[in-house]
Image (tube, rainbow, N blue to C red; front, side, top):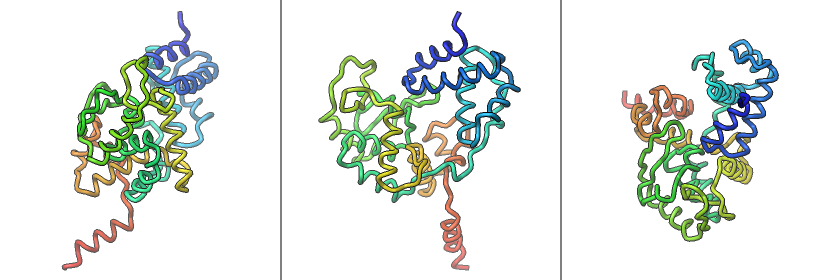
Length: 272
């Protein structure tokens, strides 16, 4: 019979997680299993988080790992959604419209990166969703988005510049018929892109542009949602657009700048 860590490894493998991610998850799961003496209980989860977690961001990640371990062993997760550590605004960076434009400009020479970033800026897709795109999902101007959370598929209509970037990349796309599902995006070596590739790509441009650390690709998603909100999208519309299950998610992603709010309020009352 497989031990809990091996069951987690098998589950993550079957779900298509990359080896580096599986390694990190199983390392934490093994540490927890040794710490708890094999007892998957609420008190042990809380004690482990108190010992290991120093920030809200890291604690949330640890909880995702432990929850995956509980699921793999068919054990009920003992914490509620409200008990997940909340992230501060500062730990949720987002890209402004100007920052996204700078990012696209800098990436123009790298056809793969530029196509990926164009799609991210145009749709707000998650990293995992970018890795899930298949060659057959792209029928310009429509791109099928395979949601990372659930099995839903949402069609997204791409702007002309994004289609042009993807088409330009496809001219030089390497051929590798041995990769299952025939992904749209392949690295120069002909391997399917992974979330690790996307993380490294984001870090490369973050350093080149002189942005503070933490400006990962998810900051583009927050920037996209904020941009849509500032251009008239209501929260219910954002929920449908982004494929969120709960109506509270738009508020988590939208970034309101106090100075801009004050200026907007001033314009509203100027005629009084």
